[in-house]
Amino acid sequence: MRRSQKIKAGIFFTGLFLALFSASAQNTFKYAAAIPKTDSAGFYKISLQPAFVAKSNPDFSDIRLIDQKGHFVPYITADNLPQPANEKFVVFPRLAVASKTDTGTSYIIENTASLPVSMLWVKLRNTAVKRTVNLSGSDDLKRWFAIEEDVPLQQAGLNSGGAYSQSLSFPASNYRYLKLLVNDKNKTPLKFMEAGIYTEQSVSKSYFPVPGVRVSQQDSNNVTYIRIRLNDKYLINRINLEITAPKYYKRDIAVYQIDGQQRSLVSNAEIYSGKSNSLLFAAKADELELQIDNGDNLPLIIKNVEVFQADQFIVTYLDAGQSYQLLTGDKKATAPDYDLKFFIDSIHQRIPEISPVAVVKNTAYQLHLPVVKKDNSMILWLSIIAALLLLSLLTWKMVTEVNDKTGKA
Image (cartoon, rainbow, N blue to C red):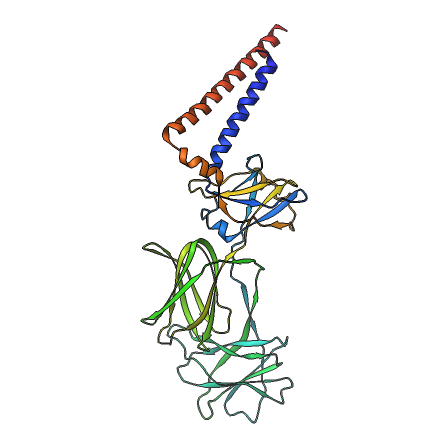
């Protein structure tokens, strides 16, 4: 056999081996989703929709991207799980202003930035007395206008450490000055320490609504149980609770993931009036249970429950006009290790985003599934081993001949 023929044979058997291995690997993924063709080559962010992620492993180890020739295409993942918003407490400076019309202890603060305020946090020295407070606003410290009246002040808890905080909710106001007037005339005054607001600086995130949410609620033994059932094991990153009553509340809430008879705690949080009650966590489940500790209070009236998945995506290089597919659904798959992770600097921060079409069953998996038997599997592996042995033999002979010719020369 001439040298050129041997090289061609080696290339043929190498290609045959790679094709057999690639086809065999693709047949282990149960689901596929086509990627829309692109008009220009470059890096793209492929968004992983909830229906696709629901079919994947929790760690995304079974996600693969293949081109129209059936070759695996390298990609990098981008972790976009939600993080709680960064909160900062802004203390409003106190003004020592005397007023002859006060009928109790007054505490006047200045909203220096004239921010719209709908919730004010006040810090007081520990007290066990019952008082109410009137809130009013002014822009010149002369004329005061009522905002909220007879707001009850809470009593200190047993483990408050010498001071405690309370939130006061009221219609949004942007008065320059706010006055807290405690109805404690002819009584021992309360000690205000500071007052202010929390500001949030949250990172912009995208969320996809999870479809097919079914919710049931049961109230018993000072605890509200909310059961959330889904049609598949979706990735859940956020739950929004729309609470309509009571006006003032502050409750502890626990989130459990239900898997058959097993119950796993995934999040502990606190919900209270005046805030957007969004629970942020990560769970992959088709059933969740929320437990709200009501204490001695009436149960919350929850009008609506929404479930979301944070935007998950991969970044890859796509050629123009080519067909690509996402594969998933192999529980035994391990995460791929591509060289592309070393070239992140080559990827621009702003890249186009595309979304795959509907998730379907992988036809290669369906065709391969009925013939997966021990005998056929053995034949396949024997063929692969034989191809490797033949390739090794041809390579050895070619190297030997080249060495002989070199020695004679």
